[in-house]
Length: 464
Image 1 (spheres, helix red, strand yellow):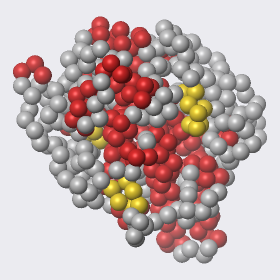
Image 2 (cartoon, one colour; image 1 turned 120 degrees about the vertical axis):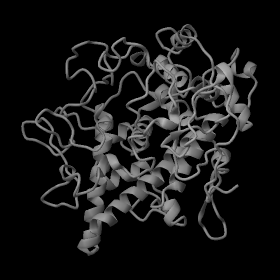
Image 3 (cartoon, helix red, strand yellow; image 1 turned 180 degrees about the vertical axis):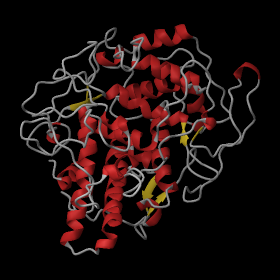
Image 4 (cartoon, one colour; image 1 turned 90 degrees about the horizontal axis):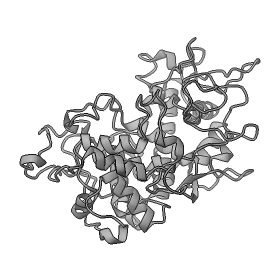
């Protein structure tokens, strides 16, 4: 069935008895379920604690690097996540109905973290001397340099989503998108584009090239070509992109499935390195630190002005030439050491990120990975995956990637969920390039005509 036409895929009888998990009937909410009939996995605290403990590099050998997957894509994935989801209210301690949860981000690739509510309702995001441009901030150097996000006098970033300032790499990536928009304005002005249409056209160029990167660069690195090409492909006759969504469907408007947001898309947590080298001047530094009051120059944590000489050198994160980029970790069932005892600012009990993810999945009543794989027709024998009994969906997605793909990309279950949701969100957005102009190809300069990648985006933005 072609995904060009949304369909309802939320039928099925409610589970009964102890397997019942609240599921509201108004399934056009911004969070929801892909696999409504499947029962929640029943698992105890002790079982989750034991599983999480085995996923930490403090108790298992370090994971290897992922060849062909530069480290910058880990953080592009984080930025994409922030663009489409935000749930500040659900609890780890009780069962939550996903349909009743409000997503505080629009489920669209619209970069509302950049543009806010627009120039009139979010004027603090815009340069008042040139209101069609976004505002750029200064770092802490004696002679301030315009290489940071704009901030208030307390150092808090003036952006549409505070999560994009959680660490230096992400805040610098957000800044790269700000600069991309501003470069698009300059590009259009050089071609005498009408002033009254300038902002909207620059915004369209920014969004469509970003959306293209999400599908044609980021997603293609994560999912096997033969899987992705069953979800999105180009018609050989008219050159238009076509889509087919088998599992992610909606009745009235797109929603964010918890199978995606709480499980499959959290594969990126296993890709985080213990430390990163920002540029040729600095030594590698951790994103997180276990020191209660850390020295500000010994970690990459955010929510503060950018220190001098801390501008990210993007050829250490993407294939831009001039340096060998750091690589992401493999997609597997191991998390790097900093993720295994989170700072008190994130979790007062200093639990591991693995445990928090597993608890989140249980609180939202996620089915087991085996149940989802069976529903999708992607079942792999537990013996082949080295599993004994039902396992949480997030862990299953990681294990599937680890065993079947050697940690280089997602397996058939996780890959299909991620591909269908990312492509489906584009298909459901009436202003996306996929919906408005399915035959469109990038129109800004790139290393290869007709292609446009994250390195091309950074070059055009003038930050690489």
